[in-house]
Length: 319
Ligand code: PAF
Image (tube, rainbow, N blue to C red; front, side, top):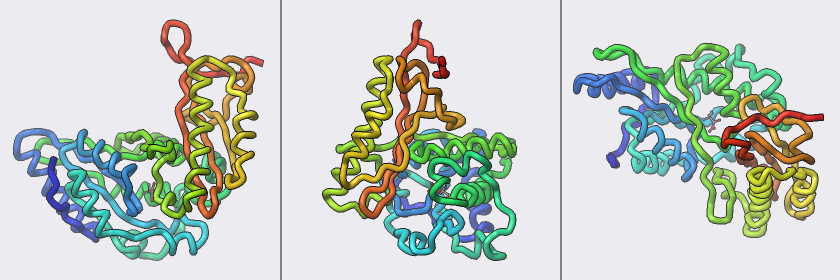
């Protein structure tokens, strides 16, 4: 594994030049190079490491971006409090074998101030996380669109290149929206979803976990434990009994549940009532969000109910 420090560039011009140099090196050795992009806002933890390692395993050249995007923060306090840890982030990326880091200042990404024209996340952008964070997904998709453009590799002497971008499955709504943006607006990039990383207590890794006190940390484990209960029931083709699970979460004094929902993994449309009170079959995604102390946490888990013959079938309302 390569651990030398990646070059850190701050302008789009340097990025294009350095990325082209790295890609051309691979092309000169006779193969058609691929590039993996890992967009981040820094404050990297093990979850991001998994993204970078997945990109490293799949691609010849790995580019990570570090940019705290003001467009996706609702309240300026949250933006100011967001941890900025560039030096240790670069160390972490070095350990994952990343080749190049793009860490632009605000003016490089938004030279004319915040953009007038933005990507709209549509109806899906207003649900779940979007319901309590108006404009968040428009802001996130707008910067993701820009970063996907910046990172897109040019053709090399070996002809066209392969371009992949890596996003965590933890932000299931963001991942679903990025996939839709890329297919709806014809971006030439493959989107790769990387599984959630959990701590030993089951809590999904997040940069926000550092703000949890010891009791809050214990309380945070209630979220993944609720999801595991649903996954266990789904796997056994039992009714999910969602209300009972939500009640258990509600009962915890430090947890303020926002939503617990079972949805189609691709469209995030809530599934029919059948999976609540009748035996669960098919594939679904359980989503949960709650405030625990000062922090809003999200988590999700895939539900798989094995059907006859080992095939999968999407759950549908049966009446
Ligand atoms: O998931 C994140 O860290 C951010 O939303 C992203 C994709 C880097 C865009 O700012």
